[in-house]
Length: 93
Image 1 (tube, rainbow, N blue to C red):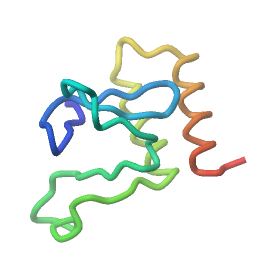
Image 2 (image 1 turned 90 degrees about the vertical axis):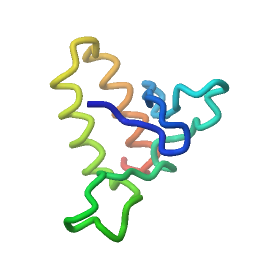
Image 3 (image 1 turned 120 degrees about the vertical axis):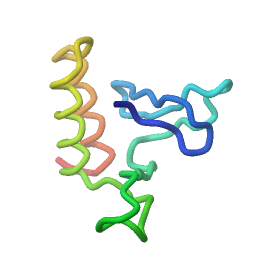
Image 4 (image 1 turned 180 degrees about the horizontal axis):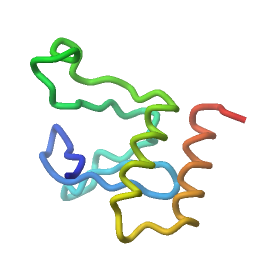
């Protein structure tokens, strides 16, 4: 499973700086995680009328930790840097 850019239908990448970008030609969709919205794809359940939602700090941390458990290429150092940068974006001390 992977995140996909809704505008380009290409894979999304996350950097340890806390940025998301799509794999489009110019990577034109590149911004801080806090500025992105996410769609779970559910069109029949509780999100049927609110497709794109901003991730809260706790929800994003949970999603990233679940993704890292399934990843074979992430390192602990990379994950720590990512979470520190995301924490700064959400103004968490």
